[in-house]
Image (cartoon, rainbow, N blue to C red; front, side, top):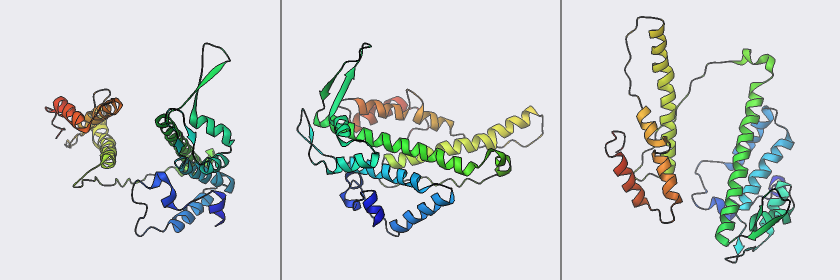
Length: 270
């Protein structure tokens, strides 16, 4: 109860960012997961002050999604309750946050003067979501670096803490109806397999050839072509998807037709 008040927590169904999919996972105890996370932080030497920072930012990001706008060409914030709570958690003045969400400031020419333009409703929503994404991304990067620092230990023990680990690659996902999520998961798997193939087969056999060591050549399916099909810039599938999303009248059908026309002779494209 104390944490709910401290971080301005609401029921999951009351968050706009959490209501676009299933918010209940059978067999998952959120309270137990939270307690396990806190215990893991404490084990790694993360202070209560740092944990307050982590959880406050996450809560602020969720509350940003609850900020609604009225008006079309020039917006104002409807209910400032979420705004005030989010600003408090971020440690900023609510009026400053309100201006950042509803007004675009311009300056240039080496002059100290600047001018502002009110945002439209569509622009304000995009601006709000962009801020939420950037805050979450920055927190994620910071948290990864902070945990790595804790796991690394002091510099005097780095060499003694080196180890050989086993990577358990999670499986590919192929459903009757697949979404962008499955595509990204499978692409990650292809990337991991590429790394595995390189270090276990390519690099190792190149070293054998360099040292003139006799061995029986191992053949394997090289998925380099699959990786290049997906993320080669600017001609890969991801680049084409990004380009189609930027078009005012881009459609799924148009994107599929472009991909089929471009990659119909590519054996990796089916």
